[in-house]
Image (cartoon, rainbow, N blue to C red; front, side, top):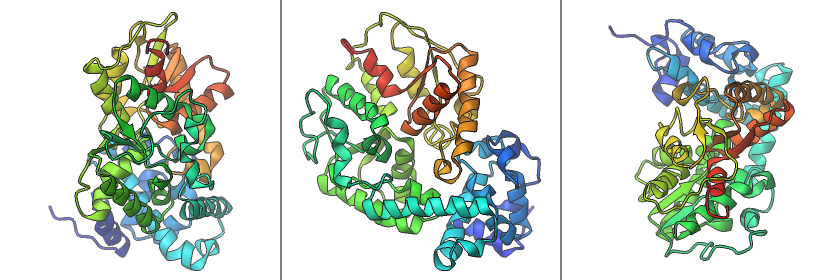
Length: 406
């Protein structure tokens, strides 16, 4: 049966992201799986309904669009594989490009939460466009994480003889709390004799925060710059420890540029899995071990299909017992740190992270491992706030502990 599109809004969504909102028959499975549904005036299924009826004004003048984590749980639950996340992404672009930027936040109505959140996202976007990173600091400081290393890796700055480029990402490069992730990853690569390099100060934000803030058009400058830097360097592979960076490089960059990148893109867990399986990393049993569990980041899990690699790594670390949480793989609960929610509505992040860390406590986990700097930040904060004796760390940090003398 052919379904005819009858509203301009439905046509816009179909043209921009390929989603046919008329396929939705309001079974509400997307809403039942949404981590933030209780904080939304319009549930995911209702967003689809508003789009079906062409009620654009209601959709763009409410904060519900911006309380979406972009976690894509909705798609996993939908019997027709419809993605409310993709609807949200294109509607955010519409809100910012057609209303917020040319007319100001007041043009979107009187919702104070919406106005406050959009102003916060506006400041974030200004920092990225001006400084090429989310922190608003001098971008030449991207290698600050190397300052307290006993010995800095050789060839760290744009070495064309390297095997692979490590794209560090804004969170790990600019926030001291996350320095341990690139420090651990570089130690693992050195231990496995992998020649790696970085783009140093020529690494610009991957563009994901701008994309989720409705400014994909503005992100194109960053995207083209990063790809040009890789092509000029001539290194055949690029890797990243940040799932959002991976999502942009692997999925969005070729789509936006309309061409093959000319080099391989892989997440760090894929590279580390190969190093572990090939026994290029020597792993030892720790003096004290326990139960380790894994939290699937949304951008390499549901959006990227990378589930087995991190679990294969953890299964090969001696001494630890791996136990899955209640929700895992494609059904994993989001950490709460996605979709720029930390900027738009910080308290809501804490609520969602608390739900996830509670699932780790249910299985008596000693360590909760993820493969995402943002997940580590949000879940570690939730563990402290709830006084849970669970250590939260990135898989690079966990694996480094298993190295001799690690």
